Image (cartoon, rainbow, N blue to C red; front, side, top):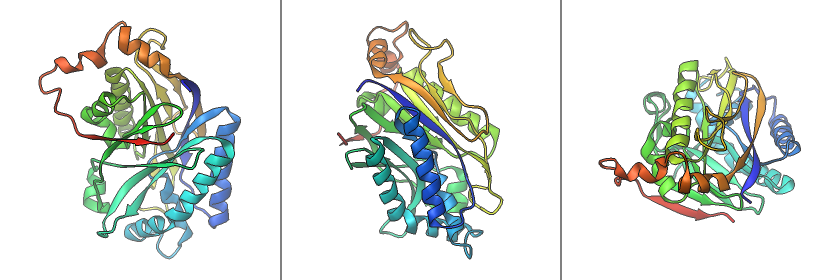
Length: 298
């Protein structure tokens, strides 16, 4: 499949009454994405932190929140897998802290396919808050996922602001980049947005940006959330002049839908008005890229 609809979430962080409330919320969101014709639904970075509200005794404690959410991930992932199969959707679940065997936590996104396969991408570069207060550490490796939709990469929030990560994915064949984010202020949103649009320009590919939105005063982790979901492409033939394929209303709670056609990516890389992807190699030091692990999810 080269042409399909993507749904990017502007997802609200909410205090949940109980586990069934979360099931109902997520199920409703996925159902609405499917009803909108989406083949891929993208949720944001740290959207899973709302699950900390299921443990009232620790939900106002940062470390307690992280531990609670990590412990719930097996249930959360089982629910996503079931919804992906039921609706025939690929779903990028909201990222969450995951505790490794060494006891440390990484920020992990999981890509669920309708056929039951799951791909995992950890955040590679930590923000100051993650490093200095959360105690979240960098994961590895950088991965490219070969799916029935196409070749998909994921750069979580801050990772999207570092061009060599996306470029390594382009070299591996990436056609569609997913950027889940969580930013507390408009300036943070704009950093990620500018990074996402720059990656679309450099790689001559589509980039899907999904942020958290809304206030959650009870949470020490995600109390303020601002952003607008979008789908970006390169400003070139067949794309809007500004490269914005679809863009949500700032801070609204909504799905943002947009059509992508991966044949256009191949066409532009071969014969676009400019050839950014091909000409990357002409930069000094351009070959010094991180390794990419290719994961088959077809």
